[in-house]
Image (cartoon, helix red, strand yellow):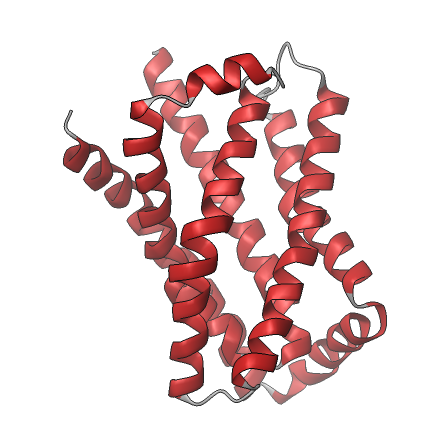
Length: 225
């Protein structure tokens, strides 16, 4: 299969889950702006974020991005034969740290471009997010660290896995698939007030990771059969 075919197949595979995730994010945005009864809940979450800052970002992202997907994968026997405690620690620490990183980046965006939700501000934030931060740091770093985990924490095996196929096919595929899903999603995130951006990011992240886990489980079962 050529590089173009590989990337095309990955984008096609992520299209439906991406549309579902985007609809989910839009639903949260619609509830916030058009369902007055939801305001006490949103206000409570925003107050937690304002009160606890980076501690909230670490804890909530570790839970939604790390613990929930880990429990599902553990329940589906995805970690059979591996040190489950070590994998759990990786999921929690990695996603908790990533949550603080994303929170810091969102704060920088607010300082640079303001907190308005007009289309010019949103377009600028989404462009910086997806074409700079995500393309050159977030997506590659996540892919590389997950590869290290898959290599059972062996640096020599990890280094050997960084071959031409990984760098020229796998990495571009991840970045392009990420754009397909997250460009619309972060557009919704940046439309929310500052203290609700990380909470919405957490929900979208959890939904996305769980969908990927389900898809990968189905693919593995199909390959095995």
